[in-house]
Length: 324
Image 1 (cartoon, rainbow, N blue to C red):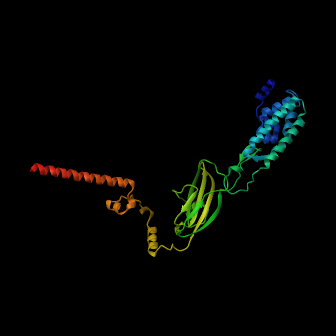
Image 2: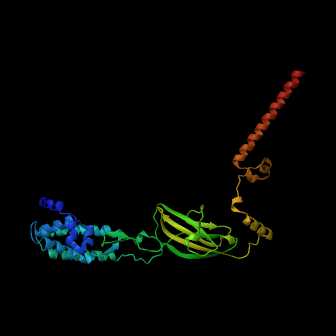
Image 3: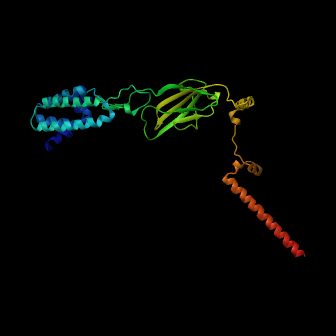
């Protein structure tokens, strides 16, 4: 077959579009090369035969039915293997001097049956919201893949919790997420039941797919939003509306309620958390404050005080004896 190589090198790829016309983006072009198709026709009709053009047209016409074929993205490898096997079979039939029209029609029918088997496992775009790789489809018209255009925003989930109790939100979805580079970010819109992103503010310390509030207070009423991201690409947005009901807990007095309200009036800028530096009396009065570090410090102070007293007593004894 060395005499076929010059033709494959000279003819440009643009000749394929002129020959195949509207079917240029069919599955035949996605999974076979122009050189492979040209080689098959050269074996069937001959290198300088006037029937070479007719062979190429018959090849394209036989596979026009596969123009709008669409399969699951994970099955494209199976379809590629089927076209590779079809190419080898056509080369064998061409060597046996068979009819290219009959061979192309039979090959197209066989490929149509294979594609129908693949379509039986088609995943419809009727799934929960979110960017889901499982819905990715491969389209022969253009030889490209596309994920189902599903909305990212999930419906708002309502949760009613009594004041003083615990509220927990689980940021999980009903489809498989990638195993790596998954991040969860939480936001809050106080007092509103909304999905409008302009009302939400970030909750910096909230990480992971679980969020818990304990104890729940009236100020926690509002919508909590969880955004699931993969490699900085959002996959889904979940919303939880927390409604706080009920009176204060039984053990809470009116004075405690008033004190909490006063603390709530203090500006955020005035809130400062200072490190606790306990005195010796506090350490002795609060046993739970005797951490291992504090215990070592206390032991060192006791040892230093004992050594100092011993030295002073010894110096006084020497002075007293020398005077006598």
